[in-house]
Image (cartoon, rainbow, N blue to C red):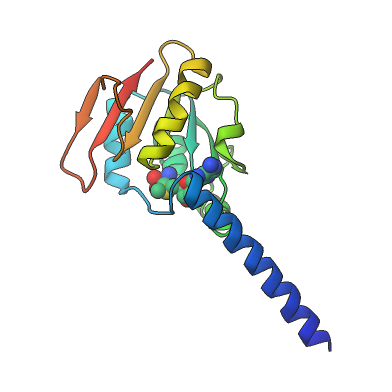
Length: 173
Ligand SMILES: C[S@@+](CC[C@H](N)C(=O)[O-])C[C@H]1O[C@@H](n2cnc3c(N)ncnc32)[C@H](O)[C@@H]1O
């Protein structure tokens, strides 16, 4: 009896997690990570400085947040909607002792971006299209947007890096 209740609760949690993960896949992007070397190169190019605020939209396992915090001294916040990926990200931040890096279980479309100095994302063409008016409305002048693989259609990138499976685009508002 107890075992079947436990199993039922477990299956329910699993089903809810998978449904939310599918939702985040549908509205944003699936979970695929950016190569760490590419992240470092992009952050160097964007000249991320001590104390700057970096937002990772769809933070995945938190790797970009860890690099931004531990190697560039940035203050980082990440937003992740897939529950399983979010848990992996939290564990990864703990494991790397990235103290002060904050990962939220949150839909990034609902996050005010006006505090950011740098936005990092690896999403999808439709997510970039949906983010454009939000960027225009909320980002302050001088904010940098680093996007792995997907450009902001119609916007002129400041820099483009090739040589990785995906191109990298750097924009400045
Ligand atoms: C391609 S992965 C990139 C992960 C990480 N930023 C990296 O570059 O290694 C995109 C992530 O965005 C998450 N995601 C998609 N839509 C989202 C949304 N609206 N809010 C928060 N996270 C979202 C997905 O669950 C997925 O983990």
